[in-house]
Structures are given as structure tokens and as C-alpha cells.
Amino acid sequence: MLRIASPSAAAFPQAVHNLLQTGLQLRDRYRQGEVSEHGLRSATGRLEVRLNRLLETSPRDAANHRLAKHLQNEQPYLFTFLHCPGLDATNHEAERAVRWMVIARKVWGGNRTWAGAQTQQILVSLMRTCWQQDKDPFSYLTLLLRSRSSQILDIVPAAARTAVLSA
Picture 1 (cartoon, rainbow, N blue to C red):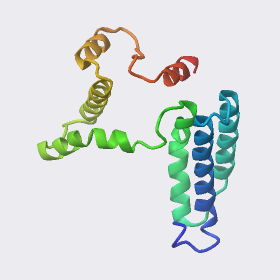
Picture 2: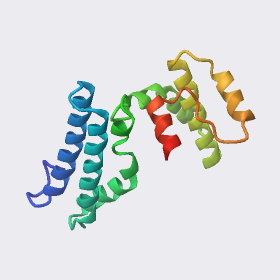
Picture 3: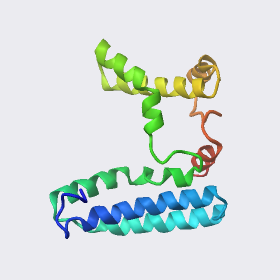
Picture 4: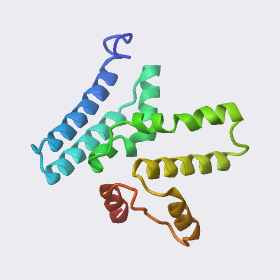
């Protein structure tokens, strides 16, 4: 967008780019020990406020409007990598990990319902996570199926479990 937009239209995507780059730099500084956990939380809050202010504007350019709408939909997840240190900033590795299932779905014909597709998505994610952590997926599936309430499994990163429990 930055390359093809007019200078005035490029201001919005440039601001988004700068904001996300600042988040990545904050992550790196935290990993290097330059920023404390409290500092990380405070700076993350300031980034989220900057994002809110940026999204309060109403871009006139159609491409910027689509980008703003997409960012509003994804807003709760944009800085997950800062709320749960250790998580990647993108889902690239996760996408590659389940690529085999996407190919199988395309060849096989997919699911008959959206509920079936969502169930498959969750099961594949759970099985792949167990495989990556060298844990038995059958025992986790059994635990979830027998549970009467929501379960937070120990395959979820500790920081994410803490965030879910405190929310």
C-alpha cells in the first residue's frame, strides 16, 4: 500500500506499519532484558491506545478504509505476542504446521457444515500442539470430552493460561 498510494493516502498504512514495528521492537527489548515485565505491560497499553486513536480516524481512501476495518476486527489479537511473551508475532509457523491438513481438506472435499469445519480446525490444532510438545493427544482429547466445563490444558503457554484466568 505504501508503494502505490498517493502521499496523503500512504500516511495511514505508514502509521500502522510504524505502530507494529514499535511492538516488534518492544518484544525484542523485553527478550534482551532491557524492559521489565511491568515496562512491557505499560508500553503494550500505550501501543493499544495509539492503535485505538489511529482507528478512530475515518480514512477516505478505499484501501485505507478496508485496512482500518480489518484492523478493527483483529484489534484484540494484534498485540497477543506482547501479552503472552514467547508467542510468535505471526501465525506463520502454525499455518505451516497444519498445511498438510489444508491440502487433505482440499483434496478430500472439506466438511459438510461450518460446525464440522470448526471442529476439525480445533482438533487439528490440538493434535499438532501435542505433537510439537511430544505429548499424547489421545489423553488430552479424552480429558476434554469428559470435562463438564471449559478446560485450559497445560499445552497452552503459561503466560496465556494466566491471561485467560485473570480475564
